[in-house]
Structure formats: structure tokens, C-alpha cells
Length: 433
Ligand code: EPU
Image (cartoon, rainbow, N blue to C red; front, side):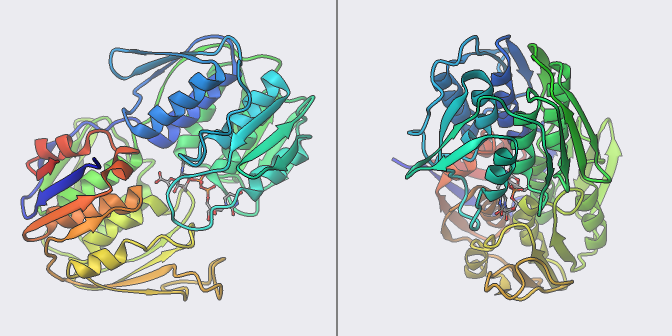
């Protein structure tokens, strides 16, 4: 039977919470381990189901995976036993990243077509075009991509849009390639820098000029094992911070830095929310003012697309009209309808609101939202359809009056470790049934 959360809202979240490792860094680091026969020790792994799915994928390929001390993963792939892994289809977006490592080790690979959250079209044309430029032959089959390459060659690649996945895919293919690869207009998310740090510690030669969005990779002949650690999950930080603010509480998170949160903290300041750097971390609480803000989601260092859903709940409580212009994904406001049913006043449009035109202009994608606050939210029966929208549902339910019953909990479990237990420890009335 599918699990549900029962939430009774209205309790301010109070206390301290330990932030887990980033799902979107951890899963890529597991794939990076496939580039060597030696063991890789990855500390601070989050215990989320996307990691389980990636572990299953690596084990199918031939990795031996052991967990130590709860959160350290030891992964060793002495031999790639299986380079064709099509049947693990559509469960997350990680398998396509295994192409480079599998091609280096076996010369051919077959990976499933991508799954992941339903938040827009999400093509992989940048991945395919870049790998083809590096000498890989790729064939789209009914449920998979089949690829072959005798050697992968360095290339000069300019991305039309700084795609996180395409940048990672090119890096993973380029580290053991012949010659030099340059990625222009690359994504420079901190999770990518975390991956680069791991690869360089394995013996790769990668440099990144974040300001210029330029990553240079000089191919090396082999990579060694490594001991490395996953960075804190920025989405968790934002989710707990916003949950504290939306419920009128106060939450401290240790071991986090502001340099990868700048655009979030700037918006909090504009909103009138309060935070303070202390004890090597950040404390968040709600101030007396609640101003509306305009947000445009952008690749890093801009305001991250994964933050807009939790943030929108905060904006239902601001005094006035806020705008969110989503410029990364073309269909990421599915959850707004549920917030409206809970009492929020939200309009969605296919126009570019609040700023300049984005690449979704005049394409009939509903990618702008206006939120008029303050509105009281009330509990409801809701079904989560994706991970970050699910977090918006949870935060809305925590700040609403009355009971909410939220199904689709498996979406949240993909990216947040035991979220119900950790929210309960902060005083939330949330139960899993
Ligand atoms: N895009 C293309 N063609 C491509 C690749 C991307 O048109 O070949 C477009 C996408 O359709 C999208 C935009 O470029 O409109 C950005 O996509 P990107 O490749 O940057 O995203 P991703 O690698 O698929 C990762 C995270 C997402 C996060 C985005 C943006 C993982 C597994 N996923 O996705 O995280 O929102 O980067 O930062 O790392 C989540 O964790 O809930 C999540 C969706």
C-alpha cells in the first residue's frame, strides 16, 4: 500500500536540524566511481531512494557496494560486467550519465530513456550532440539509447543553455578521453564543482572558471580510487528554512555556508525574513515584515528552479503581489492548483512576467506565476506528483489550519531522507501511515 502523510498544521518549527548530503551530487559521484577499478569511499551520502536506484544501477553494471558507518558508501567496480542496462527504465535521470564511463570501459553501452519528475519536456539533445562531437555513435531505440565508441576524443562544445546534466555528462566522458575538452556556457552549480573535486582527487585534470562558465578537461589515461564527501543539500537547506519561516518558527542548520545560497538569502532579505550566521551554520526565523518579491529562476548562481516551489508557500503569506518567472523548466507550476485549493491566490500564465523575455516566450508554456498575499491556508487532501512540488505541499500543510492528507510520499522519499521524522523532531505534527 502507498504511504501517506497526515499533517496537522499551525505548529511553528523550532530547533536544530542536520542537513544531509546533496542527492544531486551524490548520485553523480556514484557514477563517477565507475571510471576506476579502484574503491571509492563517498562520505555524507543521503539515504534517499534516488541513491538506492543508482546503487541498483551500479550493481547491475558490476559494482560492489558496501555501506559503512551509516552514511559512507564504498563502491568498487573492478569489472564492468554489464554495459547494457535498458530495463531499469524511467526511474530517474542518472543512467544517461553512465554512458561515458561504460564506453571507456567496454566500448559500447545501452542505457534507458530518462525518467525523473514530470516538470516539462526535458529532452537530452545537448547530451547526445556533445557526445557525438566527441566521437560517440548514438542510436535512439524504442526504450533506450545505444552508444558505441572505440575512443572518445576531446572536443570544443558550446551549450545553448547551461544544462546541469549535459555538463556532467561531458565531464564524465572527457576525463579519460584523448586530448582536451572545453565546455563553454557550462553549468557551474556547486554540485558540479563537488563532482569535479572528486574527479580531480582521482587524478583527473579539470579546471572551472565559474564566472566565464568555462570548464576545461585534459584527458588522462587512468583514474584512481578516492575518499571524498558529498556537499550539503542546498534544497534541504532551503526547504527547512522556508518551513521554519512559513510556520513562524526558528530553525538552525549547522555546517552550511552562504556562498552556495547567495541568491536565496538575497530573496529572504527582500522578503523581510531574518537569518544569522552562527556556530558555523545559519539560523532562520520570521521577522515582523513580510514583503512580496519578484523571483526569476536561473542556472547557478541565480535563484534555483528547485527552490521556487517551497518559496511560493512563503509568498502566499507576503503582503502584496509576488511574481515567479520560471525560466529553467517549461512546466513547473503543477502544484499551484493545490495551493489555490488550500486558499492561496495564484495565477499562472504563459507570458514572461516580472522581467525580460525568456526562451519560453510565446511558446504557450505556463511558466509565470503571480501570488497575491496574505492568504490563510487550510488543510486538504493532496497528491504529490513530483519531488519539489511535494515539499511545497508539505510546507503548505505545516502552515495551514487543520488536517492535510498527502499521498504520493514516494516522490519525497526520492530526495529527502526521512523527512517526516526530521520535521517531527522540529515540532511538526506529521505522521506517515
Ligand atoms: N535541456 C535541454 N536539452 C538537454 C538538457 C537539458 O533542452 O539536453 C533543458 C531542460 O529541458 C531544462 C533545462 O535545459 O529545461 C535545464 O535542464 P538541466 O539539464 O540543467 O537539468 P537536469 O540535469 O535534468 C538537474 C537536477 C534537477 C535540477 C536541474 C537544474 C539532477 C538529477 N537533477 O536536472 O533537480 O532542477 O538540474 O538545476 O541533478 C530535483 O532534484 O528535483 C531536480 C529536478
